[in-house]
Image (tube, rainbow, N blue to C red; front, side, top):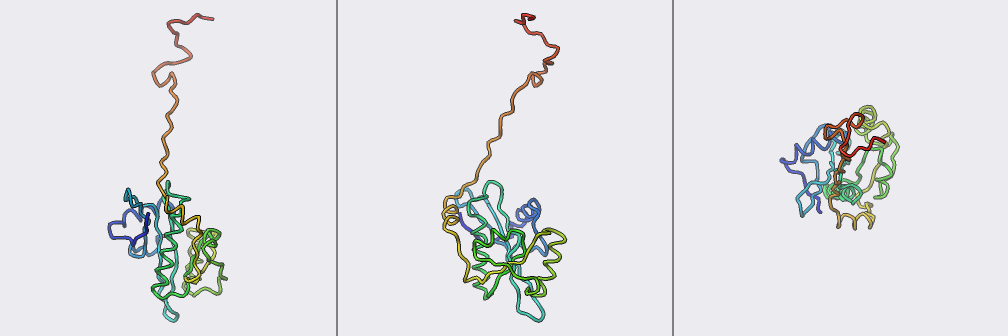
Length: 195
């Protein structure tokens, strides 16, 4: 399992995943995304975005958003490693702080993200928080991290090393007389004793 930058050919898959999970696709640009991929099957397992907000008066702002893990890949550290890659990217690009506007604040807390008061957000994120609460995530709260303070819980690192797609075996439906065109209330059987 590894995390790579999204490519143009990933665009349709990303949009389908974002829509299926009800995530934020505002100002979608596939080049802002990273994708977790299984190196054995080449199956895409999860994704996330580092969205950049240019501001006229302040320095550019980096926001972590649209983190999604596909069914069958959850609880295996996939989302954690997507977040790690995005935070590392922000640090390499010189951002001293990364924000996220989400109701999944407990999940982000394990990596070192902390709550931020709305009035302490850059103006562009205050507006975005209001819009996000109205349109997608009414419980969203602002979170932030200084990239050098990011920490990966060891258990999530180990799960990611062993991650494999969970395949749900379809249940065999129980066969009934009706499946064979038999009305059980009216049918008589060859060896029916009539008791």
